[in-house]
Length: 463
Image 1 (cartoon, rainbow, N blue to C red):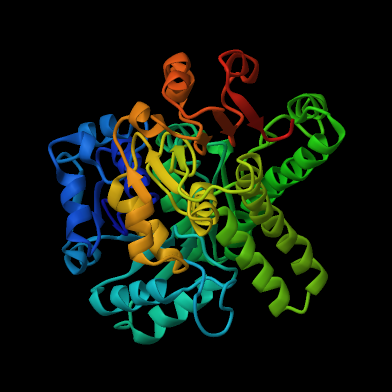
Image 2: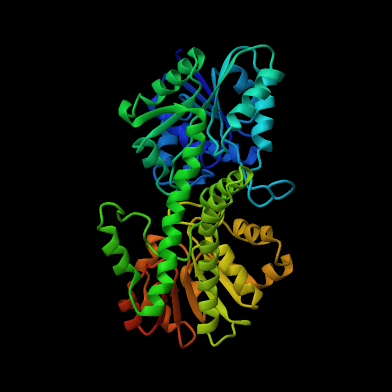
């Protein structure tokens, strides 16, 4: 089967970049990304590529090459579905905030709505691809909806989870470690899988394209994120042990990372992991395990989340105790709000939760982030529901100048590892801060010895 038209429902952090690269690498295939959010689609179509709704290094060049040629962004969802032979579902699957599985299970209402819309609109057979991160056996539910509410057409369901790291998403898409495609072991399922394999094979070596059954593909995504998050929580747990024993967590990480069985990646101590995937996917894994009566398995993975939450609290607590156990009306400068560098994504960012702890102590926080908007920062804090809008507006200021953020501050907290923070004139910063001046390096980004020589009192996780 030769695919000529692709539709992707969802123009977010996964759908937009993924479809842009697919379009770039397959100029003979028309790729239409649809979303009901008119403002988001307008941003994807903006002539000023700096206004793309997703910031990823290199994404602007990919969009520039393919947009208008064979890459299109539209709010005409029904039309795009109707014209496509292959439809990707790339909508949000947040953790449920209500009902059965509240706080752990994935909320699949948007996936179900997509399935029902595809069934209603389709006027022929289609391949439907799960791109969103989903619980095991979601494909079965999607197929049931399509088969029972469609117009008698055949729907082949594939699982094609993304393995993107925000900040390097374009690089990950253009040179992936692997592409995973799960489908049914039937003639129709094999044909559908081959159609998707052919699309990726236009730039990905065949040996890096793995095909499995649907259930293995769905579970592999959750397990991959759980294993990566586990490494972060593990080294963060060791960071506190290092502080108690006067060991250096960087030295410990380097030593154990030289073991080929362990390796060096994801062993950098920090204030905690964030992003849309790790916590959500682990909680999903916990819920699935509990649903199957595997309570010991659930308890094991839940501890990864507990450790991550504790690390954020521990960092905030260290700021409070170091500033003489009172931060009321003291100015704390936050460098960074995104959950990691080279992205404007703030979902589950450690900065949000550290800020919440400090605001509960009546601190005044001034935030600088090179890519995150003022509106997003206020929205993140309001979404927590633990602080009044009045308190947030009165105690949180967002600025576009890092030196303004740190002027007359009692302390600086590094919450995102943006490279530009390393190059600041820290002598100038010190001159204009309250004394004693503190730097709390939650991302182990700065040269501690150099900053200390300039007069700062420095707290770095793991030392």
